Image (cartoon, rainbow, N blue to C red; front, top):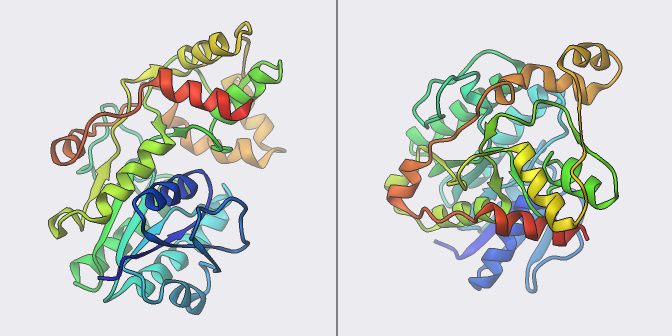
Length: 308
């Protein structure tokens, strides 16, 4: 198998994956629409549109592995249109010669009362959760057909340096550093598992050279013991040296704001992640690979330092 690894998407997770691959001395190709700044030394950039099959196939030609770290704007209509197409294109590009590793989330389980485990059935409730369930079936089917070795590595809400879509990072730490209150769109008082971006990247890279029996399934990234968002914001405020101030969007106000603010409207169907304790069982991954995730003291400190 070729040593070349194609990393599709160069947000917080893609950057962390590329950085870890560079330390290993891997041959790296980074693919997205526009060339980013700060590629690791020796990494090659290729422009790719995940919605165009020929573009994806060309970007992945000759690779030994494809790691999808891509994301799309947080809109249900866009996800329904683009994610299935992008997944098919990436699977076609990986077929026969490359392993496919998917940086995944946990939406496809839907509302649950206990800790999430990889064997939970796929949901059909909610537009974005259904999309994630549908694309899960796509890679599972292609793996089962023997067309490609495919695997999903699933993380909870992630945080860390450059995690601009993270409530903890962008709407918490960044605002506290700026002297503003943290702005939270849901209750900050339920225990919640958060994934540190470098841990997510480490798990993805771990699967890169895993035995073939590890593929065809999903794996949950280990997290530090669950804390509430308020506890983590208090930790960050202490590191910053500022009093903790938190503004929480009232639950009753969300539907009204959603009439005018698309981002709030898109969160309404995802309330099952934040209206109760949200825990992730990563014991399967821990038994097979490693179980020493980054502690919050270290992860929050690194996040604070990056925003400063």
